[in-house]
Length: 217
Ligand SMILES: N[C@@H](CCC(=O)N[C@@H](CS)C(=O)NCC(=O)O)C(=O)O
Image (tube, rainbow, N blue to C red; front, side):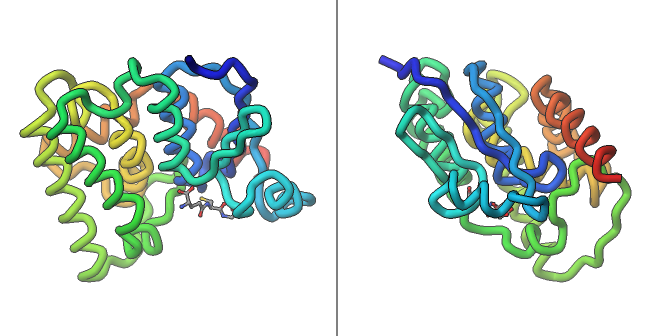
């Protein structure tokens, strides 16, 4: 039985915090009611607030009464646990194993992509210098997306057909590709990026990021 306690998700900047986007998108896509609390680092009390709220001092962090869940993937797992019928992990066991593999790979890897192409949700046409390591990260992500779409994507436009945790994990990459890479002329890649960026919650996140950047200007 799912908890009825108030759910509060602590997130960082909607323009810059890629880890926050993952957990937020999973909660939104699952249609879960929650309060969001934005803590912007670099603002008065920002760091203090984070340290008082999140055991790691990092976002995202989910609070349900006295239960605290931190780290984007752990939050997504917790939501999947609470609401198994939402299908945040694919039903088929093999598909689920692959969804977990690519999610874990995204969670622990792609450091060069993160460093050279940090999420900047509202920006377009940025051209940060590439490197062989960045090209390797991009090629690996393209390969993951092609493989999942081809093997498991028949039931819908997402990696495993219906929206899943794996899509939440890769959503910030769709934003990075939109900011730094643009169209690739590979319909599998371009369609998947468009699918993520056109999701209603992603458009809502984009509005929040734009408002935040306007306030900071
Ligand atoms: N592995 C963690 C990483 C969390 C993380 O590094 N969050 C960054 C923001 S994207 C953070 O809170 N940095 C400190 C700050 O922004 O003050 C997760 O998946 O949640």
